[in-house]
Length: 297
Image (cartoon, rainbow, N blue to C red; front, side, top):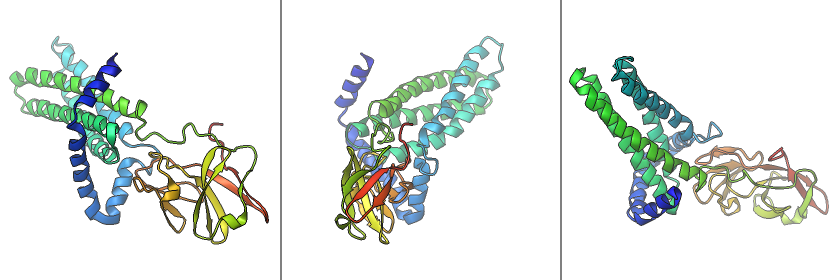
């Protein structure tokens, strides 16, 4: 019931998508002029170096700090807890929320369609939350006892927005699969090699998409040797075989993530998960592959 209501509400807000597009242009305008260093920074904020999206790791800190703060604030009215406990929780949450905001808007840059609408609503709720907590902290920082009550109720309003925004963030991940590894449920040849062609099918420096026991694989001959990785980008499912090959790196045509065609490792974000790699066996009349590692074992 709640999920259907939220979905209808988001779909009815047609302004969210164009407004989200404006936000994406602003974010892109920040990174693009920085060139390669800007791209490395963007990959860092996506969490490419971590092998996991960075944003959900960081958001636990302000959520936890502000939860402690709201409990401490309310108990402080009874005189059993010092008001400074809540003040400190608000401060810690506010510091962490800046990192959460930056990583969140960085991930937002790679969304589209319904995903973009939900991501934009999530971003706006969280931005409003941070502004309310900043106002609450400012009133606390003034040190005027008469301002502590209003500061607490502003924080309570901020917490209500926080929970709403968190719900939308969960929707992004669990309903829409934003930043979820596209190979989490993939199946491929793990026990035995399967034939995917003959040596003549794979020219030097060219990418060729083949089917390996129902799994799309990208086969590349580099320096005379064949290597293969999954042909689907781990970030959003883009077709790597339609991307650009530079040396041993393939660039996804959708969001420009880069992967090593030998190991499958991520070389540039927004992808954070590697793509599965294959072991390749070549003979005079056959090219065979199997997954280098079990995907679910």
